[in-house]
Amino acid sequence: MADEPAPERADAARNRERVLATAERLLHEVGPDQLTMNQVATAAGLGKGTLFRRFDSREGLMGALLNRSEMQWQAAVMSGPPPLGPGADPWERLLAFGRSRLETTLLHADLIRNAGRAATRSYAAYSFAMAHVRHLLGELGVDGDLPLLAVALMAPLELPILDQQVRVEGLDVDRVHAGWVDLARRIVGR
Image (tube, rainbow, N blue to C red):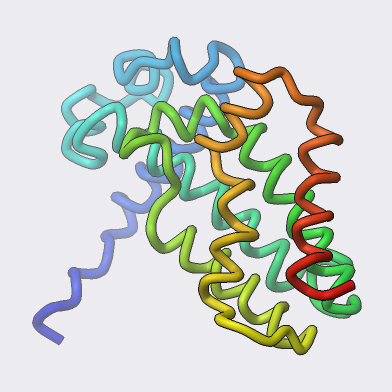
């Protein structure tokens, strides 16, 4: 179709994968705040201009790395082992989802911040998580406005809220998780 992007050339796909693997390795070595496009280009054996043409900016590269980790997390939700993946009771899946999302958000907090756009994940990543929570609420027979109830469950797992609770207020992660479980119980009616 005319609106669809042209398929990626094989060499471009290899370069993209090489850049992302290199950037991910460097990310673990120097951290997202110190990672530069020049470091990634040099380590990947590519020109800096190639990186900018591919990712537009450092923020774009960070966004691509964040999307890569988000896709891995989504794969675990869709087809990983229970209780996060299929095969567990919907309540157990919801609890595993909450814990996993909280931990993943905190693990990638610096990357999320460096990816820009007010320290948020992409719309597609957020939409996936919201759809999954709505699905689980439906399986649990929850009455009410499921899209809004899903937002109520997702909001405490997003970086701005977790930053406030964990970094600013100094709340323990287990306490934050326990509060989220309490909220989930109230919404589900358990």
